[in-house]
Image (tube, rainbow, N blue to C red; front, side):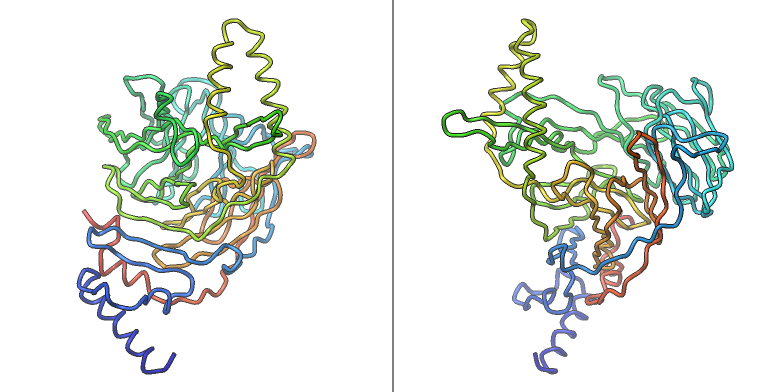
Amino acid sequence: MSKYRRGVLRCCVGLCMAVGSIACSDDVPELDAVVDPYGACAIDAEGVWTYRNVRPAEELPRTIATHAVTVGGLGDNTDEPLESVQAGLLLHSGQFVVLSGGERLLFYTGDGRQTKVVGRDGEGPGEFRQATRLGLREDGDFWVWDLLLQRLSEFSSTGELLDGRAVTHPELPPPQAFGLLDDGSVVASRTRVIRQEDQRRRGVWRNTIRFMRQTTDGDWSHVTEAPGMEMYSVDVGSRRSPARLLFGATTIGTVNGDLLYLVDTAEPSIMGMRGDGTVVMRIHLGLEGGQIPAEIEEKERHRRTERYEYLRRSPQLSQVYELWRQEAQAVPARDVLPPIRSIGSGARDELWVQLEEGNEERSRRWLILRPYEGTARLVRLPDGHRLLHAATSSVLTSSVGELGEYYVSVFELDEPVVPQGRDCRSLSAAGGRPNERR
């Protein structure tokens, strides 16, 4: 491309940023593909921010995760050893906290020394019955969600109990807290079983999950409904004896700052919305699904066979078996897995997207997305490590040993040099970032 044409394109970009995307004609050449090699950022006429990553994961810049410290295991001689690990957080102070056994919060220094244990089994303030989630607030405090008590408790970064409130809904089933928005309102989800004729979308069987919001005053409002359980159908039989198995994953999402992010694994894409359900961001990823390994097919075939036999032998459940069989045959078979396994929240305006690698354990590759910067990079975590929480330069993971012992590890992340084309941060400021538009 000549210097003259490059100059014209830069002028067009500057003009679009100055007067707004609405004033830019559709006849303008595909500037995004020219000036931004790692993605395209835009704001449409309705004010929805869009980030489109056009490159496959294999071509993205790599981030190296270097092991820093590990706690737990059979040799753990601390005052409170790790039990089952539900969640964890990297605190602003450099310490990290782990939710162990659903009842206790274990605090560690950056070098892995345990300093404090908070919580115990009970229903009083600061006590837990079945805590399942942690979330970090912008000011450094954090919250704990207890599924059994339907209570959200807020703690300071030093472990001091600040507040506790019930997050109960008048209808069953009880909600599951999903995250805390900047204004303090809680985003919660409830699974809703729907009729069979409504359970098909893009060739996969699904129920739905309803996302709701409870304000600090206790008032509930509807946010959105999203696909729930995805049932992937795979042909595993022959022409003479056809067989079909189903396996799936729950709809995935996360809360970051003022937005709820939901993943559509069939696209694949990510949608960001405010607490009132208004869509303000869309992220489109250049990903492709992977092949389904034979060991997963064999494992699922064996598991389904055992379940079918149990249902078939029970008179009360024989109708369930028949419905299950009909559903399996009704879902079109597919030969690839959707490319996205899950999504997590990193630092402010940073998302971690877990890629499906087609293995039985949790996949190991993650995309670190910073859509306002127009960047995406790839990081690989060790086998068997589950992401608990990510900060700007470090990540907290959990793993299980061969004898069932639990570990928690911290990895430091390098910051690779990523070519920056269009300055998406300037563009977002010109149009108003989603959490600034009201």
